[in-house]
Length: 307
Figure 1: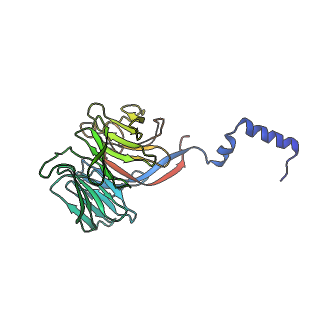
Figure 2: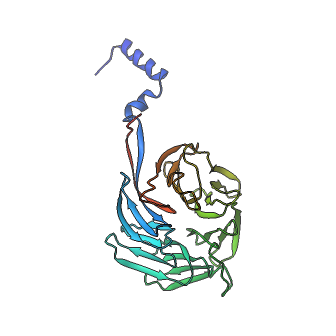
Figure 3: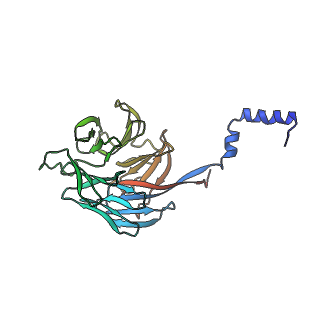
């Protein structure tokens, strides 16, 4: 179809005057973000799968459930107080490791082995699919007990280093493959979870001790480049941030643990934009007591009910 020259000029003028017009036309309009997810409920001792409508679809008992992964085969890997376990959606146990030490963190590695961090013993372990120890890194001397708060979540990095949240000592440490300390990041409030971003920055969640109730991001030089804390997100007060994710859209998903007398006083989960606005939250205080960690199962963008 051809437009008369005068009509073309009118259309061109409109586009120049309102450059967002073409983007609006391509977009379906205002949207809201909806998530289905798996999560750990430390207080109830359960692992849940919750639909995007907020309904519990699946659950499994797991004492002191704190860390969680949803594997590519659909199975769930999580800690069990003094162990780590993988179960199918039909609740068949396909991997199980038990220890005398408390365990609060686990991770499936690309080679099929499993990483666990033993809190009390201070051991970082790589386990084969049968639960046998492939490699052991001791952060504490043999026989020394680090106690209940020595370690929370930890991760094996692509380069083989370990990132460990030392909750009681209020510091995150990066270790090489032999257990040598390469870096320390102070984390007032007590670090619970730590992730390394593709750009080399590190994101840390901190508990409710003085200076905590926050999530912050530091660059490789240790400079804080982003932080959200306390009551900065309107209507979503951070009580005890635990599990964290940096999402592909640039937002940060925060688990807001509501123990220590905070039950019901804020949402369990909140997705926060870089400018500290909440775009999604979950707050079913009847079915769920606390959430320590979460894995999104999908992200659905739907038309907003009240744009």
